[in-house]
Every structure is written in structure tokens, then in C-alpha cells.
Length: 122
Image (cartoon, rainbow, N blue to C red; front, side, top):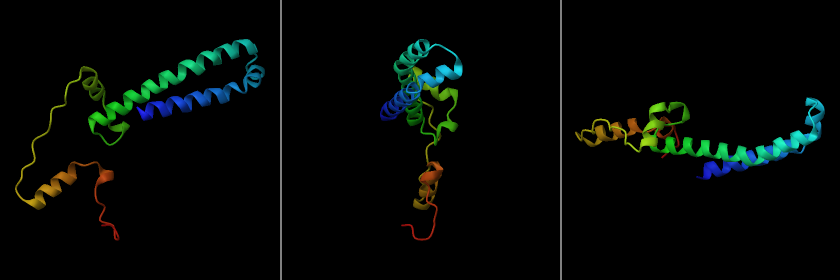
């Protein structure tokens, strides 16, 4: 929800910034200032709602899917979210030994969470 509110706020202020130059836009486009003003009035109200809704759906789908980023999402992730189905889990981890379990659990984490083994890390 915070992502959606942030995107909507940034969009709102961006449209207001553009609206500040409506006379320049009118000169460049040769449209009437009144038409541009009316267009920007609609845009300042409608655009943040649309962009906020898109950001909300993307963030919620990304969180529920457990994927690393937006580029890893597929259309199936969105359909599962809409129908409230749960994805089919993979095979359970075998608890053979402590080292084996740690290696397997680390391999299932996103790459940016894995330990890099760099010098100076705990």
C-alpha cells in the first residue's frame, strides 16, 4: 500500500509541475490554454489513481509470488492472485543433515539475500 501511495503522490506532483507550464505548452502545441488547462485538471485527478492502482497490483503480486523482481513475474502470477489460488509448492526439503539443509535453504533464497562470503562479513 505504501508503494501505491508513493507512486500516486509522485504522479500527482509531476502533473502539477507540468501544469505550471501550461502557457508554454500552449505556445508549442498551438492549442488553446483553456483546453490544456481542462486536460490537465482531469489528468491531475485521474492519473495518480491509475498509476497507484497499477503499482498496488504489481507490488502485491510480487510479494505473494516470492520472486526476486518484477522481471521475474509471469502472467500466471497475476492470474493466481486474481483467483486467490495458491501456487503449487515444490518438493519438500530432505532433512538428511544440517549442512545439506543449510545449503538447500540458501539456494532457495533470492540471489541478493545469499551470503557472498566476502571478507569482513559475519
